[in-house]
Length: 150
Image (cartoon, rainbow, N blue to C red; front, side, top):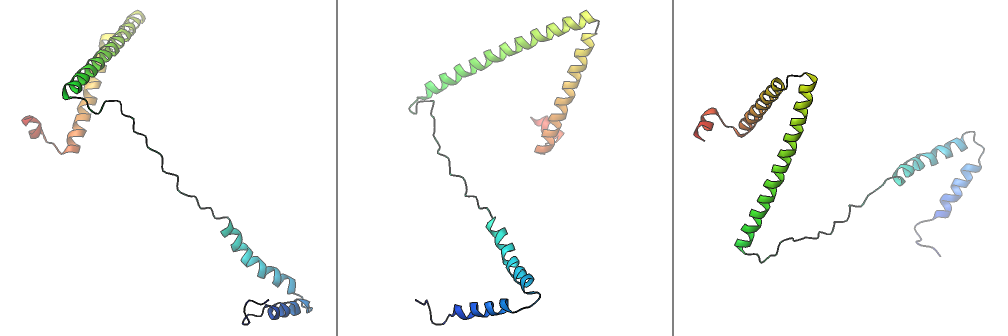
């Protein structure tokens, strides 16, 4: 059963077979070169990888506060959180001061001048804070006159 009377594949295949049967010295290299060119492109296009975009994640909202809280409850909660934060900061400061005392004792035991070292550290911190403040002021476009008005 033929697809269309316009296309006669048998004639083209017959002509190809006649050309391949003729004794020509370059028929096989020409056939290989003719097949290699499309095979080269088919190989690289078959290797193409297309990745689908990742699926959108499911977002689950977790609410930790009741949506019907009153203003007084919110204020009380904020005050309690602030007190916990300040207590935690006091604990951290106490631990830091204990550590500094231990290092002071170690420094004095080894013969180091810990007072001089602390003064140098404080001066360096002040320089760093001044440099940071200057960078912030420069970034915000503030001048010395603007700072005086604050």
